[in-house]
Length: 101
Image (cartoon, rainbow, N blue to C red; front, side, top):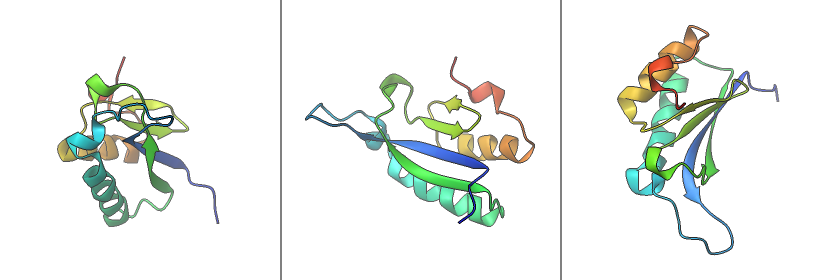
């Protein structure tokens, strides 16, 4: 398997040791994973892998999406914002207006 050029993580709110779950899953982050996978496939972005992640601990900004290796953190994500993020990724730049400080 070839190493992906970009790895996109979506917060799934999973926490260990019985800590309360975060809120990204309540904001439908699971559906965002599915949407991202479909968009990545439809756009032919072969070098992009999408994964659900444990709690990224920025609940107030959720759902959170992180793109590596760039380290771009995006907050309050929805389908429209994901489209903006992917458009920018295709252009080789971050979606500046969506980045978390």
